[in-house]
Amino acid sequence: MHLIVTFFKRYPGQSIITLIALLFAGIAEGFGLSMLLPLLGLVINSPGAGGIAVAQSKSTLEQLVTGFFDAIGMTPTIGLLLVVFVVSILMKAVLVLLANKRVGYMVAQVATDLRLALIRALFATRWEYYVHQPIGRFTNAFAMEANRSAAAYLYAIRVAAMLLHALVYGSLAMMLAWKETLITLGAGVFILYILRHFVTKAKKAGKRQTTLLKSLIALLTDTLQSIKPLKAMARENMADLVLQKETTKLNKALRKQVFSKEALKALQEPLITIFFAIGLYLAMVWLKMDLATVIIMVFMLVKILKSLQKVQTELQAMVIAESAYWSLWSKIKEAENEEEKNIGTREPSFNEGVHLQKVSFSYDDKPVLKNASLTFPKGSFSAIIGSSGAGKTTVVDLITGLLRPQKGQVWIDHMDLAEVNVKDWRRMIGYVPQETLLLHDTVRFNVTLGDTKFTDRDVENALRDAGAWNFVAEMADGIDTVVGERGSRVSGGQRQRITIARALVHKPQLLILDEATSALDPASEADICKIMGQLRGKLTILAISHQTAILAAADRAYRLEDGVANFIDE
Image 1: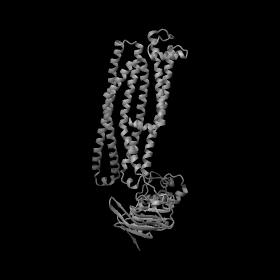
Image 2 (image 1 turned 90 degrees about the horizontal axis):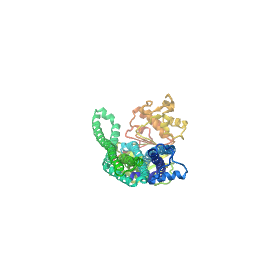
Image 3 (image 1 turned 120 degrees about the vertical axis):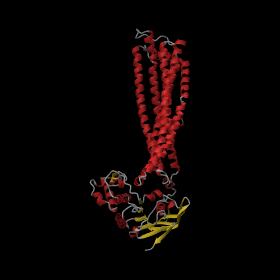
Image 4 (image 1 turned 60 degrees about the horizontal axis):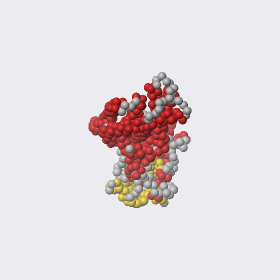
């Protein structure tokens, strides 16, 4: 029930409106059903008198119905009672439709809110936290857990709605025969208690399913990213065995879940039937209740127990899905707790350059930079070379503010980066990574990333500066040509040029190439270096590489070795 309370706190207005609509739907149906008692009395006691008034009432419900018609000055004829009954049921149908429509919208809203909360929290995290997270962990949360969480909200609303309906039916039944109703409610609670084991078992299966899906999706994502070397070595069967093992565990959890649901569904019906057979016998033989009252009483009590049965069924479905909600919400809170702190408030300027002064940085007690000092003047084309793990990317991450130096300072002009508004500083940077990721979309979208403030002219200028305009212009649809996965095929060098255009389109003052030429063939690398040489002076360029070819294009360079930065004086 904690999840129901949580949802109602998170979406109070929408949930209350929905429940009010469902409550009135139950009241409308109950009002219509209350018409059946005098209707049956007329049919059974005076079958030929379509307009004869109801005999003197015995139960509270009969008195209320009779009083209602007396108050409006009408005689409860068969025709009138049928009209009231039908109108009430139609009103119930309309209210249920409106409520279910709102519930459907809210289910979609819950999934959307959770996904957006996860994305925003994840994108705002510290870089050191972000890079250590398995991609599949959040992919699973975004897709599977968000959907199951929304389903949990749906089941929670249904549980509350069925309880309200049971309350309405119970109130009517209490007015008809309160002793029998209390006995029925007691029997209903007893039946639910007997079957509670299947709810608990389903909840455990749901938790197991959530845990296995997290690990399985994370494993699958990592495997698909490295499938090429596995296939090249004919070792994909090893990954298949691991995935098969985890999938088999998931299958067992799903089977337990299915059994629990079907067992609950199968046992509810016979238990209720046995109870009503006994109750009907006692009412007619032992208590000697009149037939009309017995029929309505049985109908009401069936409604009560059916509502309680649905409560348990929906509750079972909710507890199966609720583990996904708590799992997803824990990731959101975890990411929020790892939010990147932007302490600086000063507006950045970039008139002189960037300077790292005696900077030291370590990863898990493993020193990467040791009192390193590097200077990158404005307008220069600087290069950093060194072997893998020498600390080149760490320097870039320190300059962009993704990492903070453990010792020393990073200066932007004469301002310590720790005092600068890092978001504003990053907006002045163009960044080109080694991975040439192109989205399956147009060249325009890949350059602008959907930002509508950029015009076609801005896209063309960025492509020209990146040396990509000539081959893009020759494509069938120009900048509207779809590239990326399953799109028009472009070479590695062409992909990198489009990526450079993406970094240039917002007119940065500092362009960083993080191993951007490392995966290219020598000819493509030389072309990129030539393009960077043409941009020298227009903006400040910093390129890092483990290759030395970049040195020919750069006007100043550093070599990183054993955590120390050595200036290369040519």
